View 1: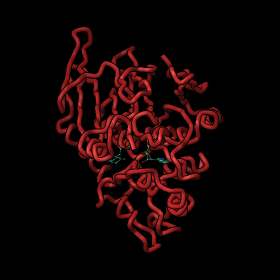
View 2: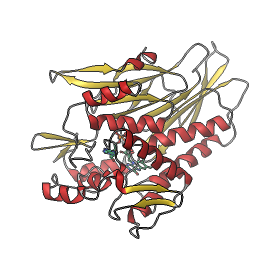
View 3: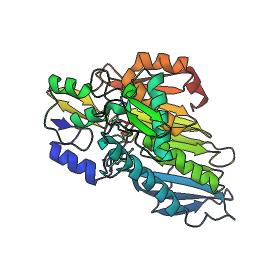
View 4: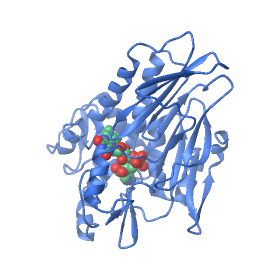
Length: 359
Ligand code: FAD
């Protein structure tokens, strides 16, 4: 089995666990590269741009904060941002056996499992998108994600139809109830994966923290999901790039301008494997139990909430171009779809509300 550019699964696992994953997502245009904290100011403008960078959730984060030159960054902000992200990681990771989520996944008593406010909020968002998309988005896919080798587990071949059927029997968002006392499994074998929504939520939480600190202009990006506040500089919007949907490319496919909005992207061009000439993507159809078969390369979604943008982007990848486009138009969700044309180039389709963000 060949996973993307890796020649065997052992090497893939090494790559995914020890190196930071290159995520599908936004490219930060004109990024100020720095260490943990860097700043720069231009003689043209009385502003300084600070950059905070670091690692979390198996990926990286980049934050830019703009301040007038006579103002300093709040003390300790770098540590507070990092702690905020690490808290979400420790609550919602499927890569940490002692995370709150993994404890819930092991809970088989049939009683409600009490969880933190943060985890509950992410479950609520996930359930809302699951209901709206008729289960295209479904966090109970976790056992399928592991079965297909897109989580921690190593696999040497695609699973058999029988095993998929067996695992599929415990999948379905309707088996999950959110009660005041906690999360309740209707099927005690059910297990959840918040990978398609928690990074977006993490972006929202860092933004909340920066708001509390009185920051009026910033860009927050975690693993390709991004949210901005205000303008970068007076009269200059924040600009982010949607990347070209090729594994090794860091080229910009389209640029987008954002103000007080988030953008999340899901794609099948970086996390996939090829078996017997067939390509298998990490976006799993919760109805069939198989990776989605269509060729949609990536979907970007703009929303006020990065968690919702993140979840819709994955849902749209699962739904495929036609269904997702119709859904996004009906729900007035700005969405941008990239798909291959003639096996040589890529084409795109955007919903009517996308024009507000187009450059
Ligand atoms: P997205 O499109 O945003 O999400 C795709 C992922 O969602 C799939 O990989 C699958 O997990 C899940 N999914 C698939 N189908 C569906 C569906 N129909 N409905 C809902 N979900 C679906 N990775 C590491 O290698 N090491 C780590 O230590 C690590 N820690 C993490 C901690 C946290 C809290 C989170 C949220 C993720 C972590 N990751 C880690 C995972 C890594 O960052 C994920 O690959 C990432 O979250 C998926 O994001 P994406 O942008 O690649 O794809």
